[in-house]
Length: 170
Image (cartoon, rainbow, N blue to C red):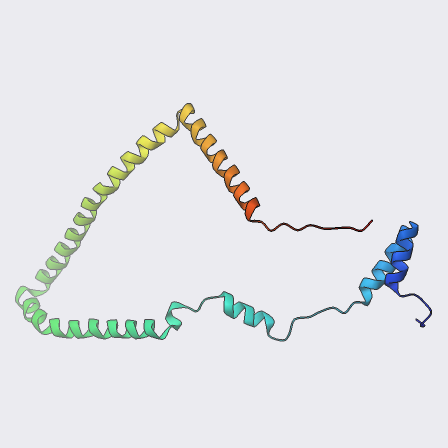
């Protein structure tokens, strides 16, 4: 391209003003094709991902220290209880130890069963709410409240959205 020949942007503007859309489009494609294609710097994706992905819980030094301290305390407590447990196990024999373990397991399961009563109360409350909501008047009221809340939220979001004005010279 020599110095006297107009560049692609000038050709586009002239062709657009004259109404020659095909020529304007070709000039526009040529102008955009001449623009440099930006590329991110090396390591960009790795830096972004390092900031987005939080480190694992176990990567934190204090978590690993707490786990190590817990394991040491558990081992120490077993070592402290073991001298007292061995004479009891020898006194009751293998059958007695098995009986103690079975009693511990059945006691645990029984406590879980008593805890399930709490869930039955919650299930009864949920059934009552479900029966109320299934009535057409209540369901319509809930739907109206949901629609009002969605509309209010959309209006609030519209207020928070930045407004941009485009002025075009004619």
